[in-house]
Image (tube, rainbow, N blue to C red; front, side):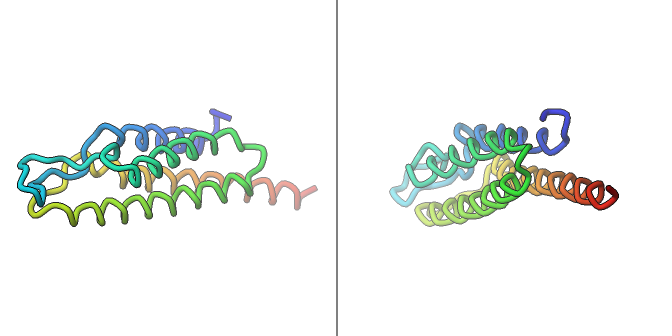
Length: 136
């Protein structure tokens, strides 16, 4: 389970997803005029639920190593969930009149990269299993 490289990638994706709960994504002037207002995942329920779901999904996917087809589906679902989460963050940015992305917003890109690397590892394992079955 943990000796497979995709387990490490999925664990890193889960850790990064959970770390975005406290780290800001955007800092700027709110439409109400509040300066240095930050946008975090805990600010709204529509950001909090997908963030927690993505972290739990990535963590649970590690333990599906015996069912690779389900593991592939869950990883693809995680990638789609991260894309939806980035879209929701973009929609939340409309409530700011001025500001900039914070350096910690790059963590969302890392989540995507780690999920893609995990998917690549599972697909590689799938290919190895199919080749070994063909040789029998």
